[in-house]
Each structure stands twice: as structure tokens, then as C-alpha cells.
Image (tube, rainbow, N blue to C red; front, side, top):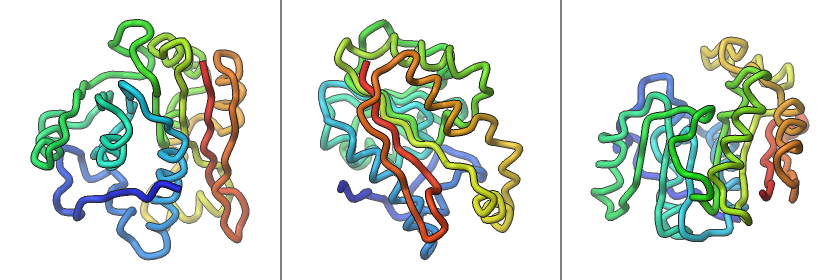
Length: 209
């Protein structure tokens, strides 16, 4: 499995205090955060261009730079100049935009891979169909979609509450709703669960166009 390559925490810039980047460095809990990203990265097969939707701080960029010639990113709120500069200082060129998965600002058939880690659960169920249509549109004919979403369990809600996050204010679609919508537009390859002693808490999905 791919090992996530992280910068020191203080070197990440361009996102607000709500970004979960701090969680990746915590003991125990941080391992779970890193593992879900590592599973998603392990499904990426490489190629010419990848689009990461909701790239945030760009924590995947070191790994993606080893697999793709061009890293493109789309994020609603990230400061694209600050994030881009962070990685430019390490010799990684990125092509970043502010925008929405419901209206992806790229031509048809642009990307080998579209990657979304903990993004789709923030959409309303009624928005999922439009999101997957857009994702499919910008993929090459043989392109792949890799997404990761939490599996909602009572323990997860409690855990986020301990961290000061009311998950009900952020998560609107379940993993089942997301999966069923993806099946309408794409072809499933496999589903990879992230399990703990409390059961499955996250899943990574691999679909092809």
C-alpha cells in the first residue's frame, strides 16, 4: 500500500482552521486519517492528468507527483496561490482552481483519474447525480474515479463530537446513497473498507468510466 508523504504540519498553508490537516498528526486517530488517504492513493493507476476535487492543503500532492505528469485540483475555498506556492517550493507544479464538483470547469475527456477524499458526503442526496455526471464527463473514456467516504456509525458521531465537530452540520449523504448514485454513471471495480475494532468506519470506492 502507498505510504502518505506529509510535510511538517506548520508548512501547510492556504486553508482555514476547519481543515482537518491537524488530525493527520495525532497519535492513534492520525493513523486512521492517513490510512484512508493511503488506500485511495493505492487505487490510483497513474497517467497523464489527475483531478483532485477538494484538495484542501494538498496532502496527496507528493504522492500524486510520482504517478501523474500533471496534478490538477478543484476546491471551493482553498487559497490556490498559497497552496500552489507551498508545493512549488518543493519542485512540484500544480494547476489549481476554485470551483464546485457540480460544475467542473474542464473540457470533456480531460483526466485519467478523478480523486475525491471525504467530499461527496457533504453534498445533498439530490446533488449526487449531477456531481457524478460531471465527474464522468471530464474523465477520459477509460478513466477511473476513486472516492472515499465515511461509513456513518454512532461511534463516529461521538468521536467527532469529542473533537468539537457536529458531523450533522457537514455530512448530508450516506455512503449507500453515494454508492448507488455512482453505479448509475460508472462501472464498479471494487470497494475497500477501512475497519477498526468497532467495525467498518470508512470505505474507498474504485469505479471506471
